[in-house]
Length: 213
Ligand code: AMP
Image (cartoon, rainbow, N blue to C red):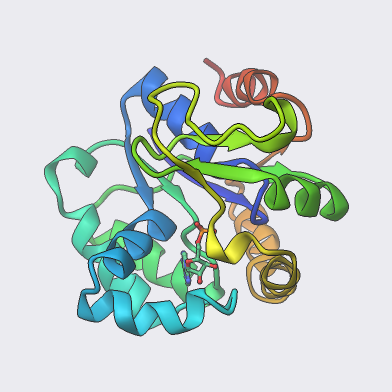
């Protein structure tokens, strides 16, 4: 299975990617996670990307495409993968299409996680990530003041780009640069729309129906 998860920031791509990976064992390729790892390790890529990420802007296409190209050539991505947060612009989508053509591994499906904008802001401002295991939690669904990951006890933190002012910018960028991808993939007959306002489990069931599994 080779799929792309498309959706606004906070639509649940990361959470659904983890569920898909656990169920079907496909390689999870998250450009946001790779970039954040580089930022933390202060690599050259991380330093260059950080300038854009902290403002909620997109990292230039060339840097991201090169990173994905490298990742796609790793063994675990040979047959099945899911792209989370990539492509985000038309040039990225075109680059992905030609990379996959060259590797003779076309995409099977593009899942679009549909959520209203105000809901996204509420979700993102309350998103907490575990520094140890990376699991994503919603502060509204936990006891007030919870600071430790309920699963591994690691420290829960708020991503720098989950502050409200940065979130608004990320949503504007999404509307301008990423939304046009929907009609692009629709024309190719690859797009499936998923209602993603419900619990992660319910959304995952909808995804399984869309995948015919
Ligand atoms: P995410 O975790 O997917 O929301 O990504 C966090 C940030 O990383 C984004 O706001 C961008 O600055 C950067 N980023 C992630 N994926 C891409 C991409 N495909 N193209 C450009 N920038 C990206």
